[in-house]
Length: 275
Image (cartoon, rainbow, N blue to C red; front, side, top):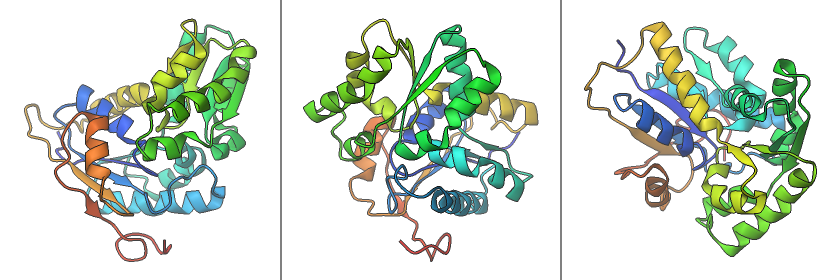
């Protein structure tokens, strides 16, 4: 048994989709979450820069005593998962791309798979690589959606702008014949209503956060590192930008009140990169 928290991070609010799944499936576990809102969105940034952010944040969470670190960020998972595992060999470090790919392969049953993701994740070809390695017969179509993250971060997930953006991004995938679409950024499940409306009832949406939570559960069980049953969990939330509004919007996303958001400053509390 290990009561230490699970560390989770993302560029902003999106990683709270993974936190919500942890709270639902692993209610005894504590979570420490960091949103790198000083640098959101990651999707249009250089890959080397994102790798540096991810490694510094992993070190920050490790320093807070996290027993596991989850890169609830597709860009970080694509660029920094291997280096983070090398840097912290005694701490399990999980990403979201492999879990999401496994879920899509199961559902697709050999048919084409679509991926909605940020420009950077699409450029990395991480999902195509993961899916084809396990199921080379599956065609993968990836579509960049740079409008999505700003819409979520501004609280416009259900707006007319969100529905219009979803139609523009989903249409090429539907025309390509996909019936399974991976929400390849942790922000995108917040737009699932708009995406589902654009895709139609015959298309299945895959949220990697669900499969990631299962992998977290399995990994902790295998390591004997689950929190004791009936433990009262203690959650902490950090952001690297202005915390105003984060608690209110984030609380709605995880359906639980966030009492306090702490500030972590680049160049002071973590990393050497100044915002």
